[in-house]
Length: 491
Image 1 (cartoon, rainbow, N blue to C red):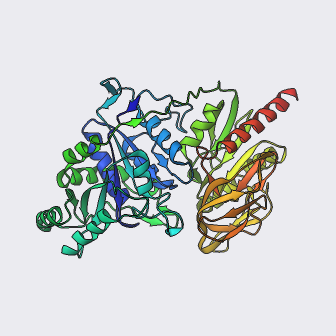
Image 2: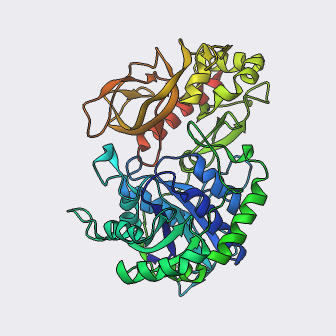
C-alpha cells in the first residue's frame, strides 16, 4: 500500500532568509483555498511549528533524521498526513492530536484529495551535522520523504548573480546527493518591476521554474530573540499579520504551480507496523504554559500510545499539581522570562519538590531542569528561588552553551540500561551541576562532557530528547510510572 500525499519543502541557502514568514504566508493562502493543510518543520526547532499551528489550527510536527532516524521521520510524516491515521492522545488544549482532518476525502483508494503538506526547512538546504555532513539537513529530509523542494533566494542587491547562486544549489553533488530535489525557486525581497526580468533570466540560465516572488515586507516581519523567533503570543496582532501575508502571497506567488508541484511527489510506501494503543491507565502531568512550551507533539502521542493520559497543568497559574499523577514532565521553554511569577507561586514549587523527592517519576528538559534547581539567576543578576528538587543554580551566560546535536552514552534511564540516545541542546543558561549520568559527545567532534541527572525515578538535564528515535526513554519512563502507580494504590 502507498500513501499519495502532495508535499513541498520550503528551503533556503541559509538561516534568516525568511523561511518561516514565507511558509506561514503559503499555509494561509493554501488554507483559504479550502485545502486540508498539514505543516512540518525540519530539525529540532520548537518555535517555528508554533507559528504553523497559529495559521492552520492543528499541530505542526518535527521531521528530524538525527533525533528520530529516517524510518521514524517517514512514519511520522505519513501518519500525520493521512486522513485515517490512528493518532493517540490529545493536545494540551483538548483538541485531538494529529494533523488530519475528518473532512478529507480518500481518492482512488489510497490517495488524498484536497490535502497538501508544507515542510519548512532548517538552516541552509545542505547544512547538516557538524557543519560538514548532509545528515540531518533539509536535503536529508527531502530525500527521506521524497519531496520536491522550493528554494527561497534573496533577490535584494543581486541580479545575474542570483542565477549563479541557484545553479550552485542545483548542481551540488557528492556521493550522497545524486538528486537535489530542488524543483523551484521563490525570489524574496525583490520589486515587482524587477521580477519579470529575473524570472526569465533564471528560467533560461538555471533551467528551473520560478514560482513567484515576495516583495520586501516590513510590517509583517517576525522578530527574534536569543533562542529563535519570539513566541506567537508575544507578536502583536499576529492574526492580522498572517492575514496580510496571505493577501500578499496570493498576489505574488504562483500558488497553482506550487500545488501542482506538490501533487507531483511520488507516493510513499505505508509503514505497516501494527502498533496498537494501550488503554489509558496512567496519568502523566505535563507542564504547559508560557514558561514551558517546547513540546514535541509526537512525544505526547507516543506516551499516550503506551497507555498514558496527558494531564496539562500550569506552574505559572495553578497552585497545585494535578491529583493522582503517576508521572510528571517539565519540558523546556522560557522559565527565565517568567522567573518572578514562578518564584512567587511557592505553593506549586513546594508541591513539585515534595512530589519529586518522594519518587514521582519525572522528566525535566532544559527549562524544566532549570525549574527543578535551587534558583535561577537572570542576566541582570536577580536571583529567583525555584523548586530546589535538584542542587545548583541556573545562571545566564552571554553565549550559547553546548549548542546542537549530541549523543548521550553509557548511562541508565529510570534504572534501565540505555544505548546511545540522540539529543540536542540549545540554551544560554547553564549550571555547575548538570549531572554526571551520561557522557555527552558531539557528532564529528572530539568534544565531550558529563551530562544528565538519572535515577530510578528521574531523568533531568539540558538535553532535549525525541521519543521517536529513542523509544527506550519513553518505555522506561512509563515502566517507572506503572511501578509508582502500583505503590500509590497500595498506600
